[in-house]
Image: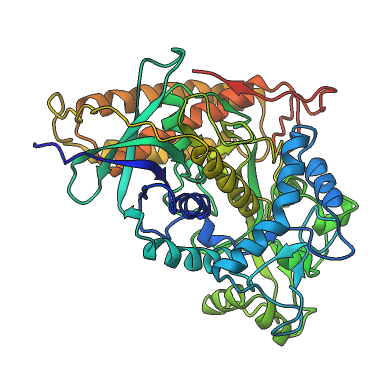
Amino acid sequence: MTPAPSSSSDVLILGSGLAGLVCALHLADHRRVTIVTKGSLLEGSSAWAQGGIAAAMAREDSIDSHVEDTLVAGAGLCRADVVRRIAARAPVVIRWLESQGVVFTAEGGDGSPLHLGREGGHSARRIVHVADSTGRAVQETLEQRVLRHPNITVLERRHAVDLVTSGAPGEPGRRVQGVYVLDRDSGEVQTLGGSAVILATGGLGKVYLYTTNPDVSTGDGVAIAWRAGCSVADLEFIQFHPTCLYHPDAKSFLISEALRGEGGRLVLPDGTRFMPAHDARAELAPRDIVARAIDFEMKTRGLDCVWLDMTHHPRSFLQAHFPTIFARCLELGIDMSTRPIPVVPAAHYSCGGVVTDAAARTDVAGLYAVGEVASTGLHGANRLASNSLLECLVMGEAAAADILAAAPVVPPALPDWDHSRVTPARESVLVAHNWDAIRRLMWDLVGIVRSDERLALAARRLDALHAEVADFYARYRIDNDLLELRNVAEVARLIVRGALQRRESRGLHYNRDVPETAAEAVDTVLTP
């Protein structure tokens, strides 16, 4: 097969969620930018974000309070300097979004101050939002800006295979030069050169059987960076969102934390409220506490789900504040104004990722990581609600500024992808089987509550599965399913390695064999 034609840009951005679009828009007036996205431009977790963006905008709120709430949720592992920088930039990036055309929900109508929601772990109302579909509204607005910019090229349905770098992993002076990209439609692999590469690939929720994430969230950026020689940190901290809609026809539909911020009560089948028995903050406790409480009640009582009760609000209030959720529930026969919503926890967000500094730089020169793929120190051991979109905005701005501060480095001519030693796969069922095996294993053994025995068993089985996938990858022609399986297998092993190394329970990582929290908070850093 003839290799696909090569091309080169000043900056390659892998991923088209909020982090990727923000980077592109801050760069494009001065650099040629190519956005490479595995699906369509809007197919990612950012567009699914319902709650909003945390920002201290109210007169009675403060940056200090936002910082303190983030540090408390992070259970000792946040980097205080990073937290303060991001919280301090929050009002600025909200105004930037407004300048781009985003229209946030106002308090009382046109021209009034912003309506600020409240979510678990926040001591004040500070969630700037667009009804209950903030992520989609922001994404759609920025998407139009991106598509109209002459310096931005968008390549859809392209899956990054691996980075092209100078030298071997670990060598000093190593620099990223580009990326190999699979065209999902033609099956060809293209070589893209770039002076800088930004990983904005999002999360890894599809490592688990049940997740709120879209299908594209397979940990690609973490796996790609790891294979290129980057360190990763704190991947054991997987945030399980407490409230995913429990319904056979409601795949990955999130019930926003904002409902609990507006007084939603978690109840048992008989209507008994249970959160006050688990934490004084009840339904407004941080997500790790709420998710573990739900998990405890379900396992103790043999329940398939619990219920979120909003029936104390009038129908008009629910339709006005949560139009997307109200409509989706109604489609499934659930009128949330008259009956509680069945909910279960599901894998939602990775607090760890590729290690970066305050400018989003990784261990490899010219390679940046922004958004959920990165470990910046903002989230620590547990992400505070609605800090994720905020991190995309602030760190996207920071990565672009760092790139613009230096002259572009012209990449050398890069080698074409070599198809010569592989053949078309004959047994696609092997990929499907291993994919399912990894996700079920992670859900059963590396979930909300863990143990040494479960983690050791997971490690042994994942090592065997990883070897099978590596052998399959070496022998057969790649496609999207195989690439995603390869990345899921890599990331699952890294999560388990981090969990085994952490000899305590902290934040989102709870191991019943070491239930106490250590006196000193230390990051789990893994190096290739």
